[in-house]
Image (cartoon, rainbow, N blue to C red):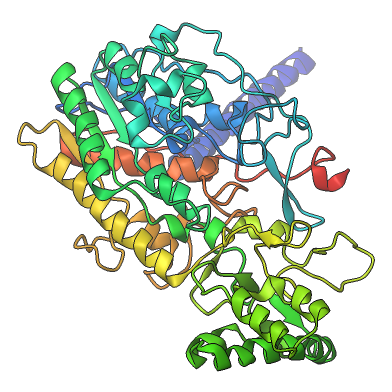
Amino acid sequence: MKKLNHLLVLILVAGVTFYSCEGVEDSLVDDRLEDNPAPTAPPAPSGSQGNADYTKFVSIGNSLTAGFMDAALYNQGQQSSLGALIAAQLKIAVESDGGTFDEFNQPDINSVNGFNTSIQPDNDPTTAPAFGRIKLDLVAGVPSPTINGDPIGAYSGTISSLNNFGIPGIQVGQMLTAGAGTPGDPAFSPFYARMASSPGTSTILGDVIATQPTFFTLWIGNNDILGYAATGGSNEAIFTSEGDFNTRFNAVVDALMANTSAKGVIANIPPVTTAPFFRAVTWNNVALDQATADQINSGFAAVNGAIQGCANVGVAQSDIDRRLVSYNAGNNPILAIDEELDDLGTCFDLLLGAQQISAQQRAQLTPYEQSRPLVEGELVLLSAGSVLGTEADGDASTADTPIGVVIPLGFSLAEGSLSGDKYYLSLAEQAAIQSRSVAFNTTIATAVLSRTDGRLGLFDTNAGLPGNPNITLGVFADLLGLDGELGIEIEGTLLDPDFLPNGIYSTDGIHPNIRGNAILANEFLKVMEGTFGSTIPKVSVIAKPGITACSGDCVSEQ
């Protein structure tokens, strides 16, 4: 009995002890939870439409709207198009207000690598292999097209339900003409023809209006300047006049306002020549040691002598001085064709006739009839990078005729003729681009700000840039370092204005990559909030991918 009582006491004590310890443990846990509460899932994003109706949203524009990047329209880029990123955030605002957001449909390209339009602008895969999007070759340190591209095929979905009307490559005028969907027409666009409601009859703008959107973004006009700039100012025919732009742009806006009840945000033309396409290759890209410089200068002595001899036939000394070539150790100017220069061919013929040069020397002077070294401030295009330093005579075994050093950039040695100064922008051409940009942006601002019904907002991509009355620092001004730091800081990360791994441009040097699209989408959303009293959650930029590296599928790796 004593043993039983003793056992009961032990059990009771153990029970009290266990209960007491358990109580102490619970108390400690409770105290710890009060001091360090368990993490909870963040609240679902929410927003409100304000006085706008985002339920049926369409995006209108060119390649910047379509999701075109890396010189191609391909699946990943299209899925993260500017329109698609904006639509995902607008859906949150609509559903937060208890509404139903119409699905944002895009004309799916159904191609992993797309079709590289910078290499094959005619979209004819029978003339050459179909190259695809550009990736970055981290070993060679160059952008390179992929080898497995696809020609631009027809859209197989329901055309009448489309929401993304971003048509790569179009100018404003192409929105208004049925020629955009008519093969053989000067205005033809294969990107519109594949999704036109009635190819050869319908227009881009007509197809937009037929959807009866409740809200739109319009970003158009870039190509009315960019086409001219990206070809080195060599094609005046694609440089839209101020009068034509004013007429065409207002026709687009007026039609949208008259034939729909939609509100919208219109963006103006950004500073196109600040893109890496115009900045990646410098004007003084010729790096030489002294021995090489001396060797080349020796070869140029006769050329300089013939050019100087033209002073005897009336050529101004100031013009001659621009053409003389002299290299030093370090970085030197690129030697290039300048079709604005007077042609010295007649002068060289006179020197031959006067027996001051031989027939062989006269033939050797042909590349220098309209050549000169570039000067500081001139912009060399990214497209020049693939030919600079290569052998003009096709003989890669000896570096005796490198383009841009011995043979002027823009001269065809094989054909013995000029191919044009399509590889750079002179100071005069840049001034023309700037003047035209200001005029076009005045037209855009007037079209938006002159309306008194509150239906339009303006996204000023030039905010904060020199000469712009809007002094608020804008996204492009921020990128260019006008705040004292080159690049733009997003979510604690500095992103650069280039197409390197931490950049916001795609590898074509003109179009934003997915991160860049996310930044621009947020800028559009800010304008919507400020104009229409909306509250819209922003796109997470850093979570988006940047550039893609080659992985055995690039031309440079073959």
